[in-house]
Image 1 (cartoon, rainbow, N blue to C red):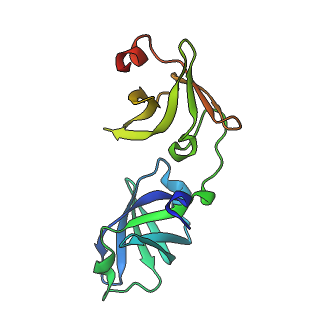
Image 2: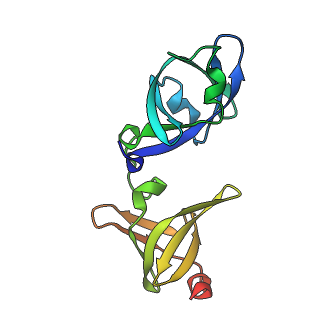
Length: 173
């Protein structure tokens, strides 16, 4: 699987206990969806390798304790600060105006009042306030990800319709 087929789940942060378990931080909105994980891909030196989970416990505040097969107390330290990934195919499908950031990269962005303002390049996380990066020619336009601004996500035609506050887009152009 290539890097485009994965999404970032979180990071292994430190060893836990004496049984080869690891603490993990999951960078997700709903940890409940991940309490029964069977396996994950661990990024080791740029290569994502699958690991089977023997046991996973949610500890609150996006923190988990995980016991993997083939990781024990002798090598647990080798996995600290390694990132965790899951295949994009394991994500539940979203509908309507809800979307995953990776899903809309490359979509044309059309403003209700200004027409086409560019193409969605990606997203930046700024103090837990994500903003969409839209490229128009060589200029970057930043639009806060706000359900009031994003009026329609047309997956079939790869178009995202927005209604930005007056003056926001012109600020960048």
